[in-house]
Structure formats: C-alpha cells, structure tokens
Length: 68
Image 1 (cartoon, one colour):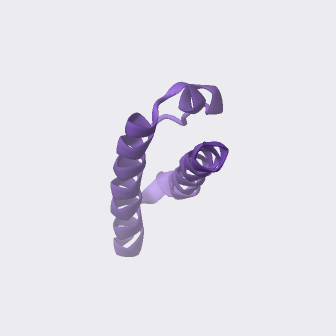
Image 2 (tube, one colour):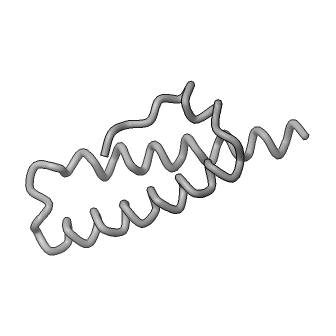
C-alpha cells in the first residue's frame, strides 16, 4: 500500500477520512497477524507507516472537530 500525502488527506472530507481510517485499521490488523505468524518478510516497515498514517488521519479529524 502506498503512503498517503498529508496534502491529499487534508483535501478529503470527514466521511472519506473515516473510510480510509477503517481501511488502514484492517490493513494494520492483517500486517500484525502476518508478523506474528512470521510471514511478513520484507514488509516489516509497513506496520510503522500504517500506524503513522492512522495517527495522521486521527489528528486531522480531531483538528476539524476542535475548529468547528
């Protein structure tokens, strides 16, 4: 999965961000289970980047709630 640019995330509406957050959460679950089984191989950094993308989306959503 490709990394998401902050500019692209900020242009998305709340509904799209929530959908993307759900998608990333399921991706993270899948990556963690593969890591536990030992089948993740070279994609170990993708767990870190997925976690950071999730945090980025949550931060944007929180900022929007606080500013309204």
